[in-house]
Length: 483
Image (cartoon, rainbow, N blue to C red; front, side, top):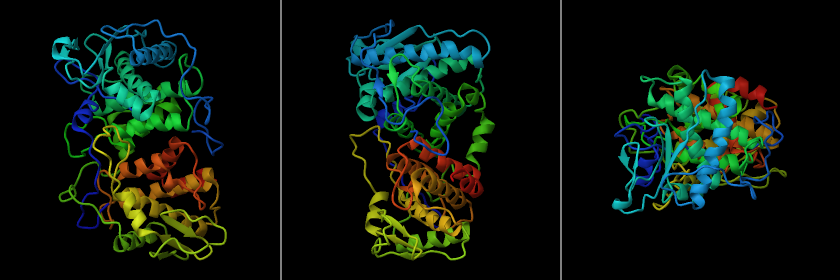
């Protein structure tokens, strides 16, 4: 987030080797291998499928392993996890494919496993390329095969996101196999479209898992679905100005997964270049001159400028006051949400400036190559925006309590403000990357989706969907959808 003249808010960098490995996908000859494409409660709408918020999550205990084998495999835990995943994905598409797509479904039958730590003389070829030090997973369209690194990549995913992270990785890769057969994409289809279609197809399978219909896995819609979306955030396009970007921002990738999860394979057919352009609206996707190396400081001056913008975005009969000295005294039994709190009785927004600034500058250790944390100023500012949104709701005569009503409505209105702040004449002004900072915070702790007392729905999926609704559909939809 920046002031005019505009400069960019920061984005965390991942370790180069894994970042590179996780940002290619459907592999062709001579190209790097593929990317790792990485709940509900009683709410105003339900997630697709007979999903459970607090049930089991991960591999089902006691289930016989799938009768699949991988060339060059070691028969260990990671290969077993991968093959059980691919078996469940394959069963799903065998049944689902003819309901949605033309022709006959041809399952993938060729699987290859390798260890990226193995010496060069032990490396095998995958898709006409050596797997020596290849930290990746991919679908190869040349021979209709899927391969993965059991030594570095998949163990890293498990360590960071659990077994369901691997399920997301391989469901995405299998999505490319389905995509080609279904003729969703052709030779001239932009890679961005292909990747988001694969994200969507993975989302359709994940809904099947959450519904309890997969043989080897269960997935609840709190920590299970949250971890899957965390992989998606971690493996995003990190530099908006890089012409090699092919997957989309965290905001776009999460949206693609959600489309598949909610609408099924039929929704994935609708993801085209035109649909992605429409979904982006006027949101910034590249940096303007001067935006790349600076971000707005989280201080009183910046928040005052932001507050002035919010009074224009959300006209109210009486604008809230702001106290920059802290969260304020007791507010008549209303919880004080750190680092920003709204007191309805005094119509005051209290702000703990040091704590809010710390939120913007959280550092990710260099040894954490798959972090879903996106540092930057808007990770902090969107929390301030969300507390202002509570004042707007009070002005509109709406309740301020209830995670699934006021909390999601707050996230939605924060999305509305985000879109308005991205307009060219806005001061302060959002730049490329800011949206992903908001997405990261909404998934991590949901502070911008909290009601007046700090209560949030446990499903990151729902928090992000509410925010996306505001970004794309505006205030009237927020006020009617979340009641």
